Length: 375
Image 1: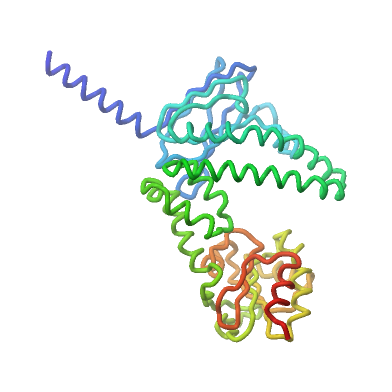
Image 2: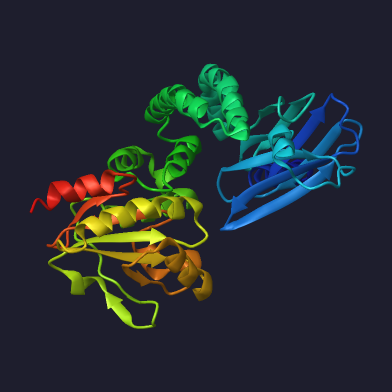
């Protein structure tokens, strides 16, 4: 009898251990969702993973395993809808983001968009944050809809008048997120918020929060990646020596940043396929024409992966400065050195090789150069 009890106890322990190393999502949708497909998507190990389940008798179930808590998405797909994905369809999609970890989850509601998803500490934190943001999101929604309408109507004046209101609400939302992060330093939600703000890392704002986070967060998969990016960002922050690089120009000849010491140099990261980059080029051309004979040079680093569109964009936009690329796209070696995860980005280097400014847009570049080059 005792032996049987011990074996049974060991079996239960094994089941409990298994449950902690896998996730199980049980959903119940009260709306008319029969036969539709529930899609689960999330990032893991640098890959976008997907799983799916059909809604049967109003229920669905999904299971799997993740290394750490990760932001995931549940979305509902109707197999009968064979048409292409349009902007209207995308905005109306029945979906919801949540934090997935190796716990049991419940999903309950008429639709996924309005369902309550419960399970795990990270998701509890996320629900708390969403409840704090909801009043501001409710204020933002009608204004965003107006902005979309003005965009369709090409009503630039109305968009310009509405933009300050949206910006003010966004600032309030950032304040709510900041307060949340300061109180939740052992949360995957805080880590996700930091990473979301780190397409272009602001060392001054990101570093103090990351450094204050728990060791558990810093040593998580996501935490280690962000920590490494912070190290790179600190090396390329304002006041630090610019990292030297050598890359081939349009004729295949090597160009070294170090050879321009003694000059003001703008390292401009861009690509022929980047709309915002191309829209910014006239501002850069204007500044270049004004200062090209006053100890100023531009080295444009392209994230293109094909030579022909790169050269065509240079000619079309009339960009008379130095251009380099290894034609490796997002794997461009110089972009990696400077932690460039989005374009356009730029770094203004002084004659002594020190980084003086970053991401100067519009008239900011010309104003900064006017301030620095007074002759």
